[in-house]
Length: 295
Image (cartoon, rainbow, N blue to C red):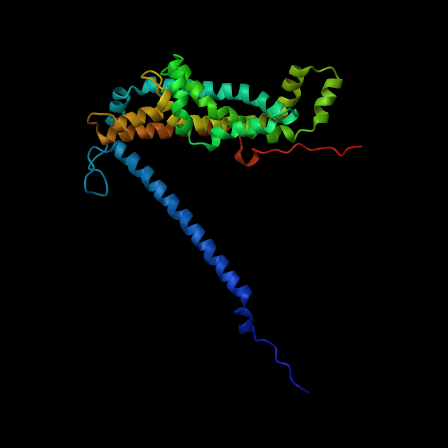
């Protein structure tokens, strides 16, 4: 009889499965190293800007020679941050409100109705989100200035609505499609008109999606630079545009004063996010309506 030899344990551990295990571990280590490096780099930049905004003098040393808050007072007076913040809140609030009022009903129509040219219309909604804002921002600003709206707060709001309304529509369509149409049919059977059905039946079901989309619109509008820069005038600049002018406009300005303005911008954005996240849980942004089996 011929003896049959079995592979040893050491040979089994050096097979293809072991190589795949080592490769997966190396990949996980590489991903975590990249993430940690990114976080450390980001925190370092933020810490440098915040420290500089309080520094009396910071040259060729690890830490400033002293700390002061006078740069915030200087930035508040020099850049008229009171007026800039007020304009920013007004523009952001108007864009968020109008995006919801226009986008949610339009999303309902796109989700529930079939009509000729629907796919072409969906493509049209996608264009402002796929195309860089500068590409359509320049001709849009030209039209607004020729109409007499450019340089005003209304012009800035209209320009920001171009990408935000399609964004709300595209986010809300999946939420609406997840609601069983029989819920609406039952509401109509009990005598609810379109308005009452939308307010008392659909709105509570769609509220997570509405809050999620408007939260993203809020953040997008605060950070939107290109469209606001092209259509804003002296009295309709948002905080991000005012920060740009503070950095690149003619004249000599203290670096600490500009850093103080950047900190105000970061804190303002953070406050908006904290307020919004009290009403929207990011882990529950997408809710699925429970469909009853058809009888």
